[in-house]
Amino acid sequence: MLLVSGPSGTGKSTICKLLGEDPRVVFSVSATTREPRAGEVDGRDYHFVSKARFTEMIQDGEFIEHADVYGNMYGTLRKPMEEAIVKGQIFLVEIDIQGALQLKTLEMPGLYMFIAPPDFETLTRRLSGRGTESPELLKRRLHKAADEMEERFKYDHVIVNDVLETAVEEIRLISGLGQGATP
Ligand code: ADP
Ligand code: 5GP
Image 1 (tube, rainbow, N blue to C red):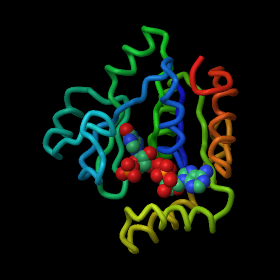
Image 2: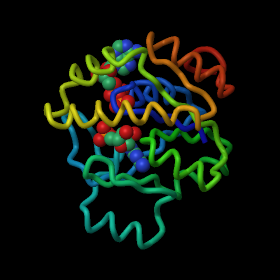
Image 3: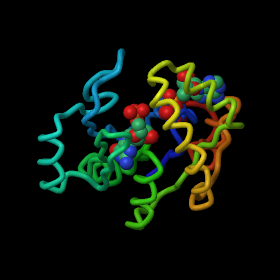
Image 4: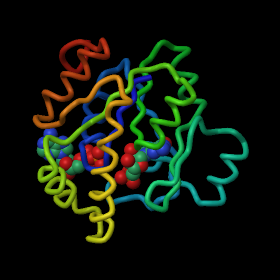
């Protein structure tokens, strides 16, 4: 398991998209109760499910971990992870800090990467530039990011996402994927 975590807006999704170009990497598609954003595809970005369905999935033990993030539920599915590991693929998990720490507590073997912004101003600019948050939610995410930065020492590596390509290259080298997008 290659786990990519960090505060909101630090570039996790952007980085994971690039890492996912490697055929040895299988991206973990989480289930969520949040509404799809423009351009998001069900089954590719997330499995978008109702709250009732999510509760059912918890009861059926379908998640390795699940968490409430800003009022929506998110969960990592057990089955695709087990299938990827059996096939010797790299299971790429993009997850918030609570989820990552849950997996760490469960002693889920893997490489734990914390994505950090170069500085707080850059994070603010990127998050507001993404244009997906209301001013209220933006404020909440930034406030939480400051606290979440303290958790970085619990990870195997801290990757500063300044120049995107450099950050991705660093993760590829550390995780043994080597240089370049494909082998
Ligand atoms: P997260 O998944 O951690 O919430 P995103 O991947 O959505 O973060 O990135 C937040 C915004 O910052 C996006 O608009 C993305 O295009 C931009 N971004 C990500 N990494 C970089 C980078 N290295 N340089 C400039 N912009 C970036
Ligand atoms: P977004 O709604 O912006 O896609 O994601 C919000 C947060 O939920 C992000 O920090 C993202 O990493 C996190 N997230 C996505 N999938 C999961 C998951 O399966 N479990 C947990 N705990 N967090 C997740």
